[in-house]
Image (cartoon, rainbow, N blue to C red):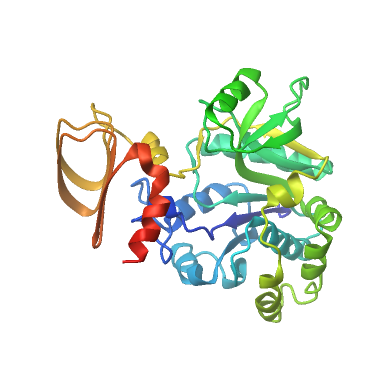
Length: 353
């Protein structure tokens, strides 16, 4: 394995659209959402470790999830777990981790990857990632893996790339916000739009110089702690200074400003597992398109449902079509899949009870 390869594994999200399974205290990345025997973070860590030395994988997460990370990834040392004392979106945590990595190894190239995505062909993912690493070792580039759209999805941001290029890695023209349906259809017709999957690759030098150029205030804040990084003084510096960072995403902070952004159209199947409906797509289904996880079922006049329980509980369904049915502890949710974007709101109402 190449000792210059590093990974930043993003594992701080709450996954509120997967309530009631995903909660603030136990979010979706720590659950076996697919019924595969591994949690999402375990699957992602295993996928990355095929190419990247285990000791070079850093996990970025909230302080409250530290014990969950160490429990589910026993091969990881405490110093590999970077604890955010406050929620500050993706730019501050990526800068923090990148400066730590650069101090360890100035020649490092790194991938930034969410911990809760689904990728089926892991060998193809590794090939794509190796191509990106090779490119970023030679070029001053900020690279992202773009996902080829399969339908006009209005829930993703899009990446518009140079359609005149014959090379595998394309120059990015611009990032586009989540579109309405007609705009999304137009994007697909153009042929040079990809879904933004939130997987980024760059050298330590390229990303830190980009922060210096486009986010001087944030860069100055984290540079103040450079002497403390990878020492026992690091935690105190981060606890005191991290909450002072602006709450901003890496897309807004860097990628929409930089001129050296490129994209590789991914050649693997991908799903962000952002909703119960997206999970339904990836699960095995019966003849009536029902997907069942951790439940025993009797189904009559039931189709297109996703049904999940704990401990193989017997669930009987008659006359429901296109529903999310989840039994978790003291909560039973029976909710139309067509309204799944409202689950975040319902979660807030339930928390007030």
